Image 1 (cartoon, helix red, strand yellow):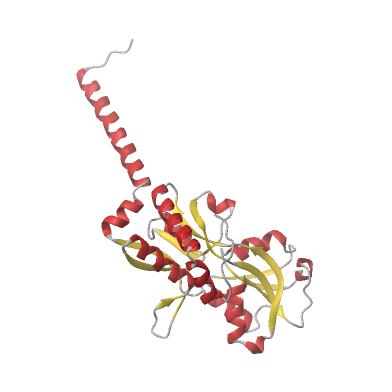
Image 2 (tube, helix red, strand yellow):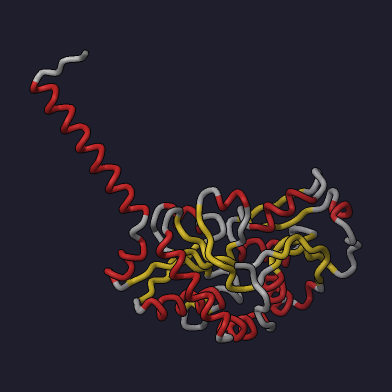
Length: 268
């Protein structure tokens, strides 16, 4: 049998108490996002500002787009003010993990890798990625991309999906944000571009001389809202707001306004 001195016993008791306090604090922090938002009466939501029509800025440099409108809807339903946090494809998940944002509404697709580090709401908008190129270019299968250059935004869903299906000798030209990716393709620095249909539509409308068109579908990937791991209460509340907006036609109206078609059936 082990015998403790009074001093040793006190130290052990103190250590156990500290461990219990740290564990309780950690558990509280893991579940306190919704409480913190309601207490502060402000929610920080990460949105894109370089990805029209999901997120951009108007002539007065004010954020606009489908993702921005969705963020505003959530803040309104929660009865709190909104603080929009501009993000790129590369930093949107880190911003959520480091609590620089309470939610990420930034054309975020759901996959197994991302589900390991963050949680997702139900889907709120349609989205798909594709490869685009000049109308004169023969591109009927991914095998036809062999040896060709492609502009893609680093870390975006289309970057990941193209890696799965394209030949190993595709020449990737990766850029840090969508504006740079689009600019490279429009300037003729690459032969093809992998991006979302919405972004491509905006790009082609503004640059008709490029004479590009849809070539290959990469993935049909609806948009989900990113939520930090363990924030069950916040996730439940966000899903309630999405379900209500789907039922009363708000999601369809938003999608029609920004994408030209209704949201339709979306995964939960």
